[in-house]
Image 1 (cartoon, rainbow, N blue to C red):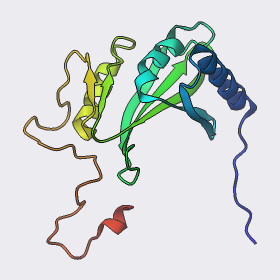
Image 2: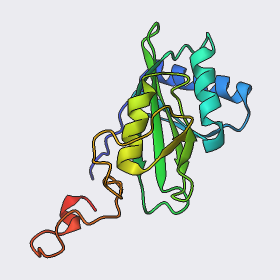
Image 3: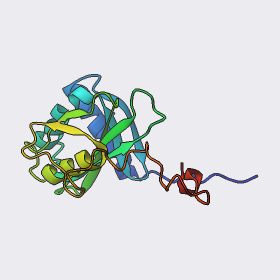
Image 4: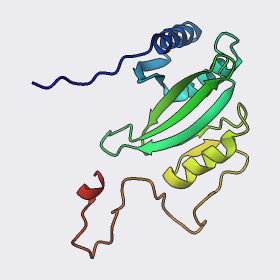
Length: 179
């Protein structure tokens, strides 16, 4: 019989999780769809339409103080019908040295989100990268265009809807690449 490894959640992460969950619940009941702790990161899944306002709340509320956007990135989960795409915002409270992740899921038919550049100017290039690689559109973005790929590309290369190898090769299959 093998014991499964279950990492201990640090008490500080648990306390932060509870504090943020309570603050978001008081600010707007029902905004948090789910919450958990991944290792030492509190993670909150929010309703798509409320995400921008929640980010502003977490930044502007003095008790929260998440004044720094560490990263913003996308992901594609083609097996999650109706919620195939996810945006993740990682926020940092520099004074207390605490970090959280905010996630929101959306369907392939509706990849539009309000820009976070009004909250954090650094979101500009992060949103451009999410657009370039996944096709997210950020309404109100000051310059939403490709950042790393050629403008002529008519697809978004990090979507999991394209073969990873040349179809003419029989020595490589997608299963070898984690699909």
